[in-house]
Image (cartoon, rainbow, N blue to C red; front, side, top):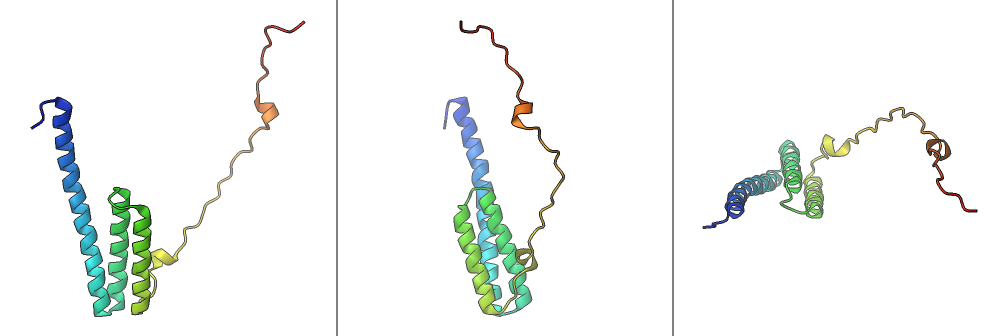
Length: 125
């Protein structure tokens, strides 16, 4: 058991993180297994639903730094390839692109006008 106060705190923090990480990993594995079961069943509606849940679980794991973002991207691509091969259509969330809103920004002053004149204290003679 640690003696130093900061070490005691690290033990508590690590225990909390371990339970949080294990819960997130468990939900990720469950989502991926549910997707596999849906692929085996062959129902397009189930495949789409479980694919969306699996993608969400992967994104959550990336956000919490449990897996690397490239690994999640690779797994999501594999999920969509399996879903496509099983005959399910792509989900609307994946197919839909979010529109970029353009807001009117005021024009910035030119660099010459933005600079303040500096005072020269000593001039060379």
